[in-house]
Length: 205
Image 1 (tube, one colour):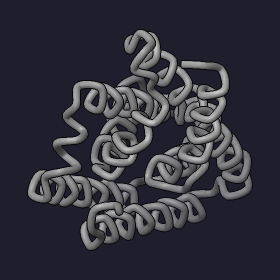
Image 2 (cartoon, helix red, strand yellow):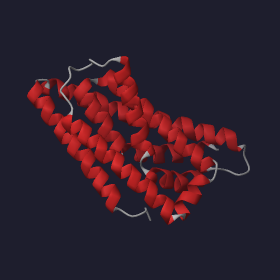
Image 3 (cartoon, helix red, strand yellow):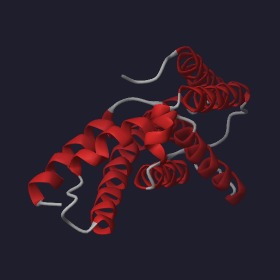
Image 4 (cartoon, helix red, strand yellow):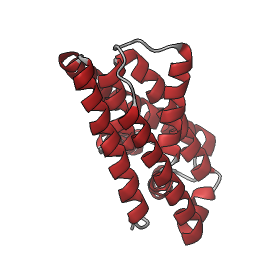
């Protein structure tokens, strides 16, 4: 991959990361509710899911998913169901002090981040449509995919960290239990709405 081509991909990766989606909502809700450091566990889960998506595309399975209406619909409905379930859990969550997360809780946040991104079939289709445009068949493929993986994850970590850090600062102004309860309900409602929209939406054009 040439430097000019990499710059093009970097710009595309920034646009993808900055576009609001379930991952950004998770980073913000976790940052506001628990603080920045616990949010890093969720952000790590988001990155592992991105690597899985990229691996699927590299193996050629992304094209199969994009071509199969049935496979796309099944994955879309499963993803929508997970987002709705996650929204219900957040709606019912008990307020916690910022940063007060046990190791098991951090593992749970990691799993949430992992499944929030894995549950979005549009992410696979989008990456399947985007990545091949930046691959030079005349150059070693492994090195190019590694460059793409590092660039994609690095930009997403920076953007998601920015969302989480900003939300954690705002969350300090709403640290009392009643305000945190409403935070949980707002973000829970957003996840439920995202799940409903994903269930109702078709495949990306």
